[in-house]
Amino acid sequence: MKSMASTQNTAFCRPEAFVRAEKRNFVGLCGLGNHGKVRERLVVKANVGGYNGVDMINGRKVNGAVTNVDLSTRGIDLVKKSSSAVVNVHDPVQSWLLGRFVEDRFVYRQTFVIRSYEIGPDKTATMETLMNLLQETALNHVTSSGLAGNGFGATREMSLRKLIWVVTRIHVQVDKYSSWGDVVEIDTWVDAAGKNGMRRDWIIRDSNSQMIITRATSTWVIMNRETRRLSKIPDEVKKEVQPFYLDRMSIPTVDSDGEKIDKLTDETADRIRSGLAPRWSDMDANQHVNNVKYIGWILESVPIDVLEHYNLTSMTLEYRRECRQSNVLESLTRVMKSQTAENTENRMENDREELESTHLLRMQATDKAEIVRARSVWQSKHKHT
Image 1 (cartoon, rainbow, N blue to C red):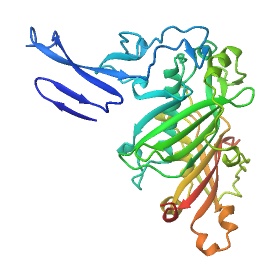
Image 2 (spheres, rainbow, N blue to C red; image 1 turned 180 degrees about the horizontal axis):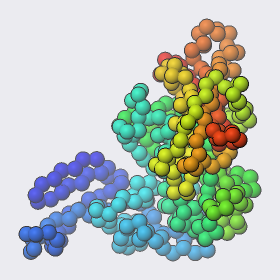
Image 3 (cartoon, one colour; image 1 turned 90 degrees about the vertical axis):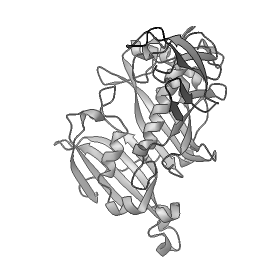
Image 4 (cartoon, helix red, strand yellow; image 1 turned 60 degrees about the horizontal axis):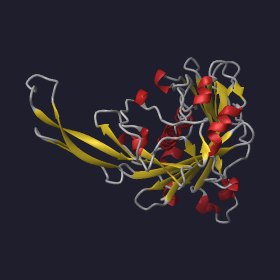
């Protein structure tokens, strides 16, 4: 994106696949010395892929009948219900301007640029960056579908019942980390997970090569936001989300790391880092610590030698209970050679090629209650490159 400014006009350039820009004249009514002057205003027309409302999705009605999507609370002036909408550039950029539905609207796709503040010491995106992008795409999927209520990713029927989504398990596999300035495309979709869960999958592609560089899968359940207790999925909520279900897995079951994660103790852990306290900025809109924040605390107990010489290529997290701002945590890690490396004939060659770690985040209080169990796989940076 580039911008050029002059006293006469403003040019705002985006890829033509996303927006078309026009100049229109209007009379400036604000500011001293502007009375009677004709100034030019930039109008952005967004190509939203034929988004005409959400009364029918995949051949089914959504939430009974929805004839219009109310975006007024997000600052949108939706001029007309058509595939092109006129939006003032001074309005907030909306999720539907950045993403689009593909594959008969079962899959939501969004494009991101890796920013300078999203990279680590290696000048590549971090695992936390990837998880944040996955979360952002998931939330925008709900918003763009027309199902969003007044909760953080909750549907309208969930909002009426004071219900929220909470993640119980997520597994991410990274083949390559993007660098600063790289453009990535993220696809996401959902499916049922048992009787009372929902599975959400993602794939990340390098926009230039179109190669899949990351795959992720997760399981979600519903919680009452006031009692903080898990709940069954009401039939009304099932009717909202079922039209979006796609029977497809980003990671085959055999490769999705469904094995139980062992619990670490003071005796089995190699390293323990205490005194980890959540900050106010770590809290999310559901009044608990954002699940991505746990990754940073987990890495606090990983040996610096591993962080410097290995890439985190796979991570599985099991979320066991909420964490509030008043809690103080401990991070435990145990590092070992992966079974793949141990079973290789040339062990000398593999000594520094692949490691597997087990992690635990727990309360520092007397009860040592578990917050998150995790497992990670690390590959030598030389081999991974």
